[in-house]
Image 1 (cartoon, rainbow, N blue to C red):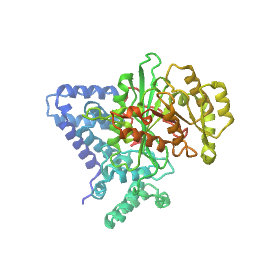
Image 2 (image 1 turned 60 degrees about the vertical axis):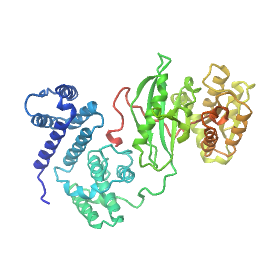
Image 3 (image 1 turned 45 degrees about the vertical axis):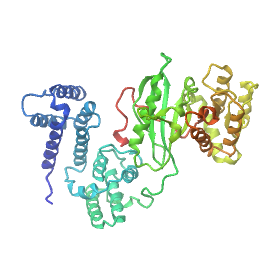
Image 4 (image 1 turned 30 degrees about the horizontal axis):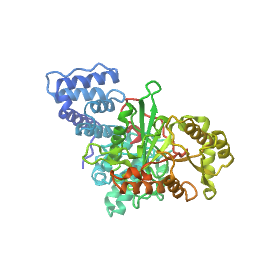
Length: 499
């Protein structure tokens, strides 16, 4: 195949981008084109020509060229089209071309098309995600929606930042992709990738760095990971309007470390929270179609929401038979107050570390309703092996006793709390004793889910009478903290270096 010059590659890419814009439903309409121009002008701080009576393709070509000459101009163009069309086929096609433009610039105008046939045959989302994580030192956790083959992943990684002492992520990805092709018996294609990779490393002065690149510890996806994936959803009180909350969320599916990916933040009324959780779960499932590990949903709740039976909020509420979250997921609560109160974190971290080092010595503690909160906290702080406190009253109510008991547990650093939302009864004491039969934290979630499954087996007509329907488990891991949320009302935080 004839190698194309840098000028030809650039011209062909701009022509392809213009063609995508000309096919866009938004730009075909005068009002839509005006809106895109306004958004672009505001973000790029440029004066752009409005759409005229000339052929749409010619106007789009001038628009693309103007954006290409501006810093981050083409990325801004794709983003502005996304404002209007979300993840339409035009938006995805434009992002693919923008990534190729950035990759071409990274490789000094070199023709990348010889790599395309082999890389396009790698289509497993699970494999591509694993390769991208390994190549990027876990900076990329999820793939963008337009990165559906190895070709698109390679181009996207070429536009990402790399530390000065690291092999660029795109070259590392090619190295791993070649290794995969060898295992698939496609040795000629693998050697083509390796030759190209070696040439680029030599041109960039990275021959020694390439030689040091270690692949031995990379294992493609096979057996399901023992590490769960997490969907964290946080509800932060507005502070002014008591029935409104800022809802933030993070996804985490990396088995090699804790790298939560933030999503958007929205301000919602209390009545809208359950529907928002349903929406976020569906979005996560769309992202995790090839995920093999189990999924845990963690809901970071303030005091005012602790009485909500969040484990039994419905998913797929637009179907004839919605189902509770507890049917498909392990659901746990986390404390918003503890996450925000840094003065409580030293005790929390210290107790957690001791429990990890000596799990066999850990034990539960049962709060007694007649005991004062002062003496409860004193007892907890005297026994640093307490892993879980069984509450005598359900939190999230107007009860001063319940609030004092809850705060005592948080100040003492106890990572797990267990309660019955109805208030303790004989059936709860039996269930709690069963849940706490094992030392440490490892089986708390499994045992709690087993009791919930027993309630589910009775169906909606009978589960309210079963203790499993009313069990609440707060399980706080200080080593798994949510990252900063995306700005309120901002775009979904799934892009940039998050992959």
